[in-house]
Amino acid sequence: RAAGAVFAKLQSASGWLQIAIGLLVGVGSAMLASRKLSTRFRARNSVERIFLTVLIICSAVAILTTVGIVFSVIFETLRFFAKVPVTEFLFGTQWSPQTALRADQVGSSGAFGAVPLFIGTTLVMLIAMCVAGPIGLFAAIYMAEYASPRARSIAKPILEVLAGIPTVVFGFFAALSVAPVIRRWGESIGPEVASESALAAGIVMGVMIIPFMSSLSDDVINAVPQSLRDGSYAMGATRSETVKRVVLPAALPGIVSAFMLSVSRAVGETMIVVMAAGLAAHAVSWDLIETFNPLQAVTTVTVQIATLLVGDQEFESSKTLSAFALGFVLFFFTLILNMIALRVVARFKEQYD
Image 1 (cartoon, rainbow, N blue to C red):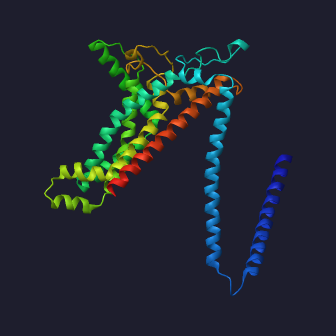
Image 2: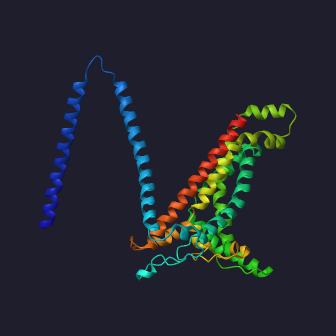
Image 3: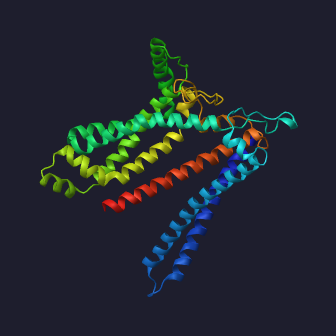
């Protein structure tokens, strides 16, 4: 009862406090407005300056946040490389990070070799893009050049809904449906197929990326001026010849950008690989067929980052710091990929403008 009385008093006081603050703000605003009253005052210019200031602040926050993330990752990466040699991390063929229990276990030989992770990431990404690239591009060409307005009004929303499905749903689909089918197929024709495989993860990841690739390519193809198509038809070209020799070359810069963005999406995916491809990193051997076997379980950089940072972690250990090193490699790879895409786009854009 006493606590209730105290709460009621605080609630009443807070109400009066809100009224007082509102009055102070109102009086202060009125005084500020009265000081600005002048025949030479231009409200439009003041509003423009305020709007510009807000835009600058928002841009600065976004830039500073990005810079802060990059520098924090670099700082932790340097701490990791102070314990583990760079060459061991980049060229080591065994990934088995463990928290050191003794001084002689820190940075043990081969424990932090990230080559298996790079191979797994590349393998899953290539399989995914072999699925998403052609299908997404052909779907975009159909919707932009061949589909009737009615068919487009049906297909476009379906692709957009597919793009909004959570990746964990695709992961369940890969683990419960695709992976068993691939395993039974392998058993029927001979090859040994693991219960979790890069092929299952790559196929489902490609299906997930199809709407992304298709939507971007569709927007790019629709942006090609209709006058180019009309000129091609006037010269006697068929629709397929117009698409092949006029539309696709003109849209090539945007298609390349869409493909590169899809690659970045595939490289950064985690849940599908966790559920369909596995967590274990197998040691790399000189047998390339075994190393790049899509029917075996693999792991990727993003999966290991998530695994290393799950639960309570000691941020002084090499095991935890290795997640930041993997994140830096992923960031650097994405940056290089985007730079290549910009160069390719600029080259073809100059050619077809």
